[in-house]
Image (cartoon, rainbow, N blue to C red; front, top):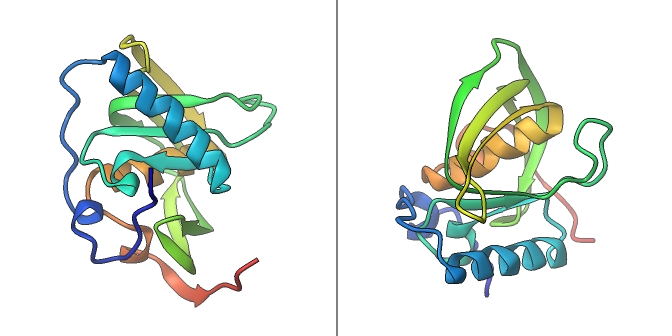
Length: 158
């Protein structure tokens, strides 16, 4: 599994295709995505970022009082509601290395889809988790954070 980078890479700029059926292969893919996300020090990873044109993403933001370090896997996700309140925050992306910019996103979202077992799930998220969900859904729609970022800057490699 290799990370796909570059703002003009076709798989990062395409609408991902729905997953027809949650199979053992899809579950294995999700386990591997989680492992790689951690290895690459990310908080979210969408299938297009590893070269797969599928509507799948994983997210895990570490401990927060609200979410207690929970792991999320979404298949065919849809954001079904958003708050009117918008927050600005700096973001980066594994697929656009060494760049950061300020992004406006909804403070709260409700997202639904299937989990790794193929069961319907709906999650209400706020704050940083809501931001991660929106960022990953953007990946599934061929959008990158650099498309709407202000104050873009280079960041030092650490």
